[in-house]
Length: 450
Image (tube, rainbow, N blue to C red):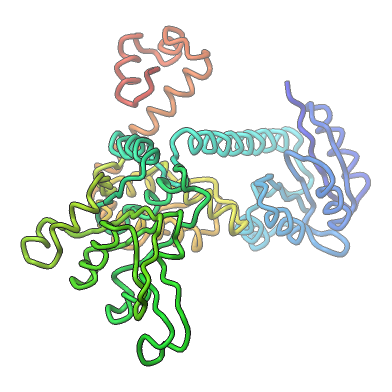
């Protein structure tokens, strides 16, 4: 059995002695400090599973120590102990992230009970972080997150087209991750060491787009005081990603078509053609075939770009990826910002699953970041979601409760399976159901071994 190391902080020697004896008797290894400053020094040089600290200390207070430990982002739980306990200080300590708050004289049994609960939750949090890391490695292709059949089909296509030099057209709604797919293709291809250049056809004004794409010579037009190398030329031996290619001016479509046919460019005002080795990956949220019918997009350019099509599914068609995506965004925020939030309450995840996400993955990322910024707790709850999601969840309380029950059932099944080394007969016995019933539930929750 693993022995846990606990740091106890109090300026009274007798208190340290009594608490240390209690903890050692409970099977813990104990380290002590008589000030917050000494505790910080030990914290930075040792590994602890828990910190117990008095509120009132010489110099920095126990709350200062709590702030410091929380700022490290380790998730190590802190239990506050004081003889000067009031409702106000208890609330302040809990708001700052203390696991619990006990008053002197401390009941040894109560202390050991609270410690056991704190350490169990801390270990569960660490296991969750490890599991999330493993899931990312298993289900990501570069930075694309998902395990649904729809996104697995995208992964399969990326693997195939990355080995070729063919032009690619990525279609899908805004926010579905079309640029991530383009980068995945590039960085898994033989061009990975070459440049990847994004050209946003929707934001560059049409009057300067030709110069941006192909470059210009000095004196080519008013204001052309020096030669400019175009983005296509900068991308030699690499990849150009034409984002929202459906917005490209019809006259420029003709010049882009010429480049795709001849693989050479002519700078504006230039006389010599320049051979380039560039792969084109284009993306659009428009129906280009409809644009062709309306004479807004060239049919011949469409077929040059559309050698291989990758269709990015909207998030509403791959809702099973929402938990994975939400936790991925949360993990990334924890790493960037340093504040540790270890997950979402069940009703939050259920609400996320109920929403149709017209803004797709980008909208989900925005919602998670907003909740992360506003939430002062270790777990995100429903009130930190946007009002539209809260209203929908409250208006569908029965569906929300059903989703929570299903999630609870899944957790109980996984716990029973883990406790029996995934022996289905023994797990069924633990749960008080037949093995056949267990297998039916496992199939429903996608828990059957592949």
